[in-house]
Image (cartoon, rainbow over all chains, first blue to last red):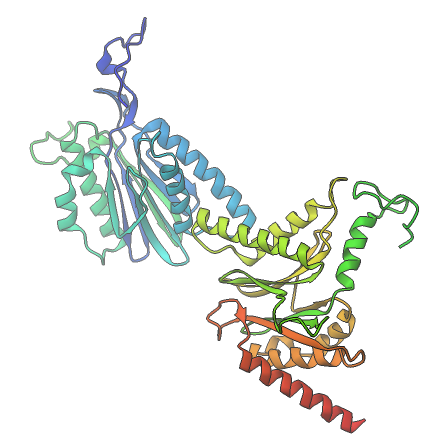
Amino acid sequence: MASSRLVAGSAVADAEFSRDISLGTTIIAVQFAGGVVLGADSRTSSGSYVANRTQDKITPLLDHVYLCRSGSASDTQAIAGYVQYYLAQLQAERGGPVRVETAAMMAMQMAYGNKNALQAGLIVAGFDADGGSVYAIPLGGTLLRVPFAIGGSGSAYITGWCDKNWRGDMSRDEALDFVRNALRHAMARDSSSGGCVRTVVIDAAGASREFIPGPKLQPTYDELPAPA
Amino acid sequence: MSGIGTGYDLSATTYSPDGKVFQTDYAQKAVDNSSTALGIKCKDGIVLAVEKLVVSKLLVERSSRRIHNVDRHAGICVAGLLPDGRMVVNRAAEEASNYKSFYGEPIPGRVLCERLASYMHLFNLYWSMRPYGTAGLLATYDEDGPALYLVEPSGVAHKYHGTAVGKARQAVKNELEKMKLGQLTCREAVVEAAKILHKVHEEDGKPFEIEMSWICDDSGRVHQRVPAEVLAEAEAAAKAAMEESDMED
């Protein structure tokens, strides 16, 4: 990955600006009593160049299951596309809702089956008859059921913060705050995470998205507040 | 069936003038001539039972199986041409296993039934193939509860409260319609099934065995053979009931 190809005659001829487009990212998902919260920053980079500052890294797999993507933007988009397709097929065949575990299993099948060709770290989370659940699918394609998961380059900066502040008995709003604060801290430290904060809450009522523009984020230590 | 000699029955890709595919009808006939098999849906599960004619005294008792496991939560009783039946059962096991490894959960009964029906229907479509001369009673227990299906050679499949295939199917169905299937437990249904099979077999006097399986709460929602002692008890009760009704006559 990240081969430094020179794009002849292109405006971005410098190797540093023409690397593979990757979601150098912070993603997170947490389970709470009545559902799950997923969150992600919005930066997409190509080397040190920010290719997109408002990217949506939280992709729907089904009405009640969403996927956080990290790693190669193209690889994870392709995976999401296949999983959406297979799940739609399965849902039609079964004639009923598909469980989150099944959706996670499908994502794992894609990630593991093509592990040598892919650069993808995924978090699948959703709400079904058994409540909310979070599944982490890191680089090699392992499938892990976890109470919360963090991923992407930015997650390294917040492991300790998350371990300290995570609780198993959070309410919806507490979980949402946890996600936003975790992202805020990761985005402050990680150069390839940044931009805005996107969240999706999935519970019995369905999925609801929220968006916080970068300037509206509470500054962390050493950061300057956005001008009013 | 007026197809004989007319040439309309040589392939499954030729309709007769009145719109029938004779090969499909012949396959169904093979099932209709089979020894009788029945399935009962109870409130706590499914019972499958089949009468097996003992064609030779040299055969080992209870050896040639007609009821097969497909997965932990599914089983099939076949009627008709038994080698064909085995092909269908193998396919069912393959579908169940593939589904489990791909989706990580057991195949729902309805999906298994649909896939089997599509598989059997496939053999009605090409001149180079003949339809399977077999029908399968499919018993499943999934998150929606127990279910009984019958898949026929044409590819038709229906979900039943109780049904029968083979020679004495009509007599068995008459008996099933008299029963209150929604209130029966599998333990009771085992006795009823034994009674019915003994009753419909009464006239011809040929030796036969009964093979029975269930998938119910008692069996841990696992498809398995009815334990030998339970089956023996049921058969004893069936024979006793027959003698009793003989006395009344």
